[in-house]
Image (cartoon, rainbow, N blue to C red):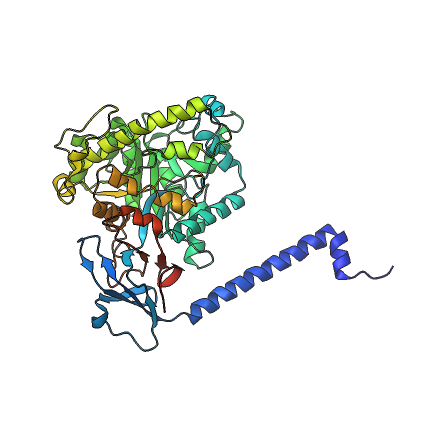
Length: 495
């Protein structure tokens, strides 16, 4: 037999073909890794970033002009350009008249979810029809495929200026912890991730009436079930074994105070914070009484509950995901939406906006009676810019709760579109920026690492062309992103 060339053999032998492709893939990964390492080695150890303005979210003060001296991945000095003496070998990045801000923090996101809103008829046929079909499809996907999709979402978040995220569930068993570690090791681009692993729920939350032969297997891919106080502790320990950064729990009518208190006690023993999904008054009260570290969403929180949260130091993590026309927009991605449903959605936009305006009103100025019903909000109730939070005293941050396919936007663009809506709901631009920088950093327990431009923190910086205090939508047009001293994106003047 005439010996065959390697190319001929590979073409005819499937095993050899697979081996050849595997070898090529390994070589490609090694090459990419070498390129990354060479890039890191070639990077200047000291960088000086100059800009026309620097906003300090904590104080509201603006430094103009401004300079930030960076040594490695940490900020070394901040001040006027004339005050900072950079070494001759330092890399200079001049952003012109741009405004510098700390890297932005999305304190509530779902990187591993990206469902298309189901068709109108499909929604009507299922329990929790707007969410469950997409969630089941995500669980049904290969974990490898899902983590790659999560990596894309993470990279798109970073491109939009989000340098830190807290991923609160819906990432499979170990998707977010593994993605976090890959990003930290420099193998993939993305924000810093605080991972929660599997969400703790009671049986019956999210998914119901599943095929009995498959139900437990499906649930275990996405959730840890709370069944009694001992089961609650065991669920926390399973996530602890996965090396999570935070524990996420969903509170509903089935979750008892003793069960949630056991979660909090066990998590705190392991030095982990507990974020509790709680929407209605009863669930919020359970979370408050159990001593949660943050209450996620909190849409129906009362003035009395806000006082209790303030006294206990519990954060409210606002998630204005469906404020205004968001739901209508994501339905534009569905394959079938009737004209009748579109009219219904448009009519529902005003009430959804009003409900969130009411929540902001209760948070920022609880002594003022807020408008109820479906009328347009009374904007005059939101005139105060600085006094609102001072009068309330409640600590709060903001998260996008992004886990939807948004037509025409990247994941990062969709996430960033949510935060300016807080301004529409009555919050000052400065407070919006605080909610996704200094406040969020404190809620995460990372105030010594992120959320501010000051010596000792990570060199996570973003810049916008205009003034985000005058126009909060500037946050949707981030032009410069730096994470840990490395430039991720720069569309501004640099030399």
